[in-house]
Image (cartoon, rainbow, N blue to C red; front, side, top):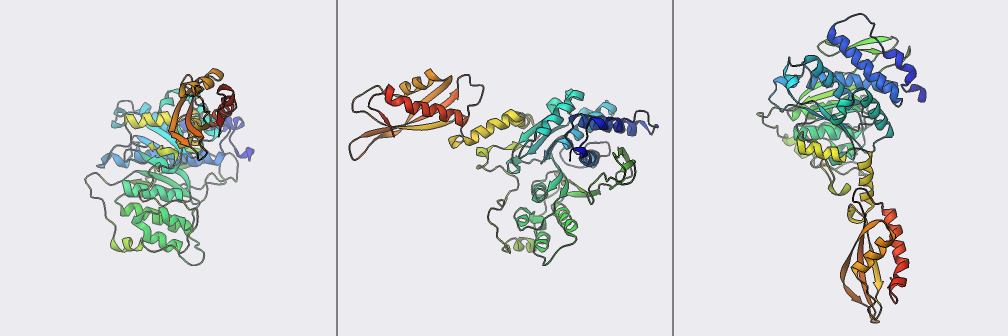
Amino acid sequence: MHRKKLGKRHLSLFDRRGSASIGDSAAGLDHLFDQFAQAVCHAGVVARKEIFETWASALYIHSSFFGNEATMIDRDIQRINRVADVAAGHGLLAWALLLLDDEHRRRCGNDDEHSHRAPLTAFCLDVKMPQSAEIVHSSMLRRWAHLDSQFHYVEGRLEQLAPHPSCLLASVHGCGILSDILVSAAAEHGVPLAIVPCCHSRKSVVLDVASPFAKDLYYDIINTNGSVTDLSERLDEARMTALMNSGHEVKEIFLPKVSNIKTHRIFDPKQLRLSYLLMLHLNTKIFTEKNRLIVSLPPGTQQPKPSLPDPVVNRLHQPLDVARKGRMPSLDQPILPKLRFLKGFCVPCKDDEVSRLIVSDLAGRVAANHRKVVMHNRYHTKYPHLDLSLWLPEEDVGISEDAISHIVESKNKVECTVAKVGPVYVSRSGRSAQTFRIQYAPSDDTGMLSFDDARRMHEELYATIPISFPGAECR
């Protein structure tokens, strides 16, 4: 597997500065791809096939949404200037789009409308941020340090993503129902979309997240008896139908499959030459077979949103043939934050200053680790707190919130807040008890205190209470 990854030994394959002149624009894209590939080679963590598929997808996405040939320029819709790379993995798609936008702005200067808007910004979202994403990030910044503020990586779930028409939802190899959830969100909320689906599935869970604008097609696919030999074609057709029924303009692009040659030129549907791609070995395929890129542009602001036809609405109420325990919850409004996920933590896609600042605060390994600490705390509070219940002595020995707090703070470099929980409890035998809630926080208020550290200090407090307050017992 390691041999299939791009490494420093492949750097010489991505150097075509001495190649024949083929036009300034094309040569510039060639050189940009070489620089992109060399940065990936220095990272040494990306499979060789992935870089080609991602770059080809990025070229088509850039040309559809951001470049001079962008279909959106003449449409009555909001200008797109932000990208959410969903299920991002290494984050290559976001980096490729940022580089293409940066190169386009650099080459055009002040000559076109594109140069007068703010630079493209992008953020990645994945349930787990792999270490490889940090390595790729560092490698990219060594060459393009000025893009640091335009890229962020957030560790979070898809359900925590709040879509918005001002942000393009993009995903290369959106596995399984991920593609269906994104299609449903785009259709319901008028969000621009660019996805390369994969891992097509007939599991009944697909119906839970399928777009109502093509629910009948999904239902027929899932409930077809026997095997479906053309499953990928039928599912992707249902996805594109859902988008078109919701008023979107849909474009289907097949990424070229290349083998047995050393170089190949990629063309878009208009035969616009976009880039050369190098092959690392003979008889090696650059792309996975049947890779389909679905590009979807939402309807204009003046166009009414299509309503669901009655047959489709009636079909929604038909029961599923198979009910599976533990399936992903049905999304009545696709991709909206759920309270049970990190206490309402959500990632806003809206392209405005406030939303970008929220994403910036959520991004990175440190912020992700802090959220995991919060998840282990009772009630998901920022700092852990634990309860202490005591049998009170008959005589007053000075048990108070301040006294308990002083014991903890005198032995640990923390800030301890103590509060009584409820009134004094009196048992049938006449003994009195009181419960205290103790919050443990870092004394400098700059870091996070883990639940394990708080529990250790709490256990020390349990052992100290009978000594500090004679006659008191921990329940």
